[in-house]
Amino acid sequence: MMAQVVGGYFTSHVPAIGGAIQRGDQHEAYWKPFFDGFPPVRQWLADAAPDVAVVFYNDHGLNFFLDAMPTFAIGAAASYHNADEGWGLPVYKSFTGHPNLSWHLIEALVEAEFDMTTCQKMMVDHALSIPFELAWPDAEAWPVKLVPIAINTVQFPLPSPRRCLALGRAVGAALRAWPGSERIVVMGTGGLSHQLEGGRAGFMNPDYDRFCLDNLASDPDALTGHTAEQVAELAGTQGVEILNWIAARGALGDAPQTMVMRNYHVPISNTAAATVVLEPA
Ligand code: DHB
Ligand code: FE
Image (cartoon, rainbow, N blue to C red):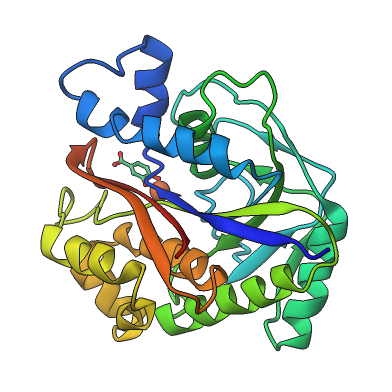
């Protein structure tokens, strides 16, 4: 029996979401349009019943800092711990890893000429914990094992959208070749458009966000027509987190995908927030 990729869950990972959860503000007018996207995500996850999550995200200075920044890093740890990298959020539950699947991916990726940084110790920040809190809000322990894949979206030069899609496709091919019975959900976190610093702080671009959402399921190659620098122009200097979504979409493979749900709401904090679920058509 081979492993099965059951679909993809994509969401923004804005730290302020953690504050809203802590205060119980999910039904407040400011937050409701965002949180209303999650009952369908939770229902889909309950039906799809994954037991592993392969998560494309970016670290924001918790595990990697500007002194040593891998372009692509993958965890191969037995467990991963969260900590607060400075937003004042609660410390979230730890994650159980899947070292055997991690090493399978590492071997396949290096064979496919992706020179991964391999991390047998790795802390994970809000970009991982917030999407899990949104998906499984009442869980005593996370119901899936974790393989985290960190993409540098923080310090230029960034990998190109084309390279991130290729990385995702290589991950997807390796997942489908894993001789286990796992049901695997792929996740992509961050985005959509936002810029937190500099002269364009507060910049968002709903036109570019719509372009990404319209093409994610059916034509992800359309998202690779821009360089990473052009994506920073179009989406903002943190909107480049769309690279995580592009890689995650790649891991779903070339089979047609159905968009199970799509939610877009501007703004959450400084971010145009989006949530999407894709599954094989
Ligand atoms: C915000 C968004 C992010 O993606 C992030 O990592 C930190 C902050 C924001 O909009 O506040
Ligand atoms: Fe972020």
